[in-house]
Image 1 (cartoon, rainbow, N blue to C red):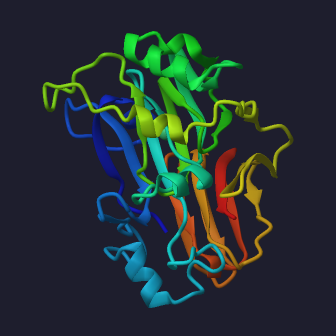
Image 2: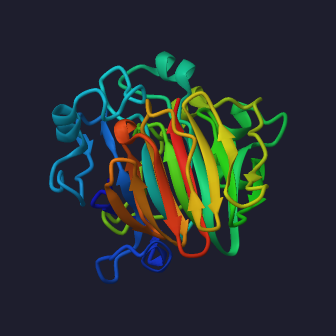
Length: 325
Ligand SMILES: [Zn+2]
């Protein structure tokens, strides 16, 4: 099942999703995000995001409508307490630096209240420009006072842990981790939440309003865990026709699959999964004789009741698979 992407114009975005993910972009606008799979209500604004199905017999319906029509077998045990698919999947094109920001973890979201929701995110790096970099966490010993002062005088970058963005690597940004990035195109899997607190926005003015974007320094410092360094990046190691776990966190698992022509996943048939095709082209065939073509750039939701299937490709097929926990 594939969905109509929802593009978001942002001041830090670019045009790379055309080339890298095959998305059709409106001319001359900086596009930072393409939402590929969304099924949640933003608790801050009350707005519902439910992706629209783009192929097959349910084309035109939203995930919500499909879940109502198909019943609990559709999402299986992946459904959250509200019956929704608990992963938000996006392509990101971060050309200009992303604001220095933080999302709460479960503990600080509860402390902050006001509709704040926890968010951990995983970035799978697809491409990096010159100087492409990630910032995750703060240098050991950094205090909230230092961050407050450095956000004020613009020197906050010096307090952040910086690493190069390397294509093929996956990084986890656990809730509570202060982070930013620049010069990178990535696939992002995250807990569906729009709760974000900005500490610093690189002294920019938003061309849409002619004003700087608002900062939320004090809630950011409440949400941040300063003494928890993020785990190191991981990458696929292993042979063909195999799956390797890249990221495991309490909210989801992310794996990479590499196949040389024929791949049958171990499929419990009780949970829905995301398949993002990185490279190659495949025909995905189910045991009951249905099949769908998928190519690089496609992001698919494999329903829980899809049962056993095989992915048949001419040549290599690389897939990033995400499974809610
Ligand atoms: Zn973030």
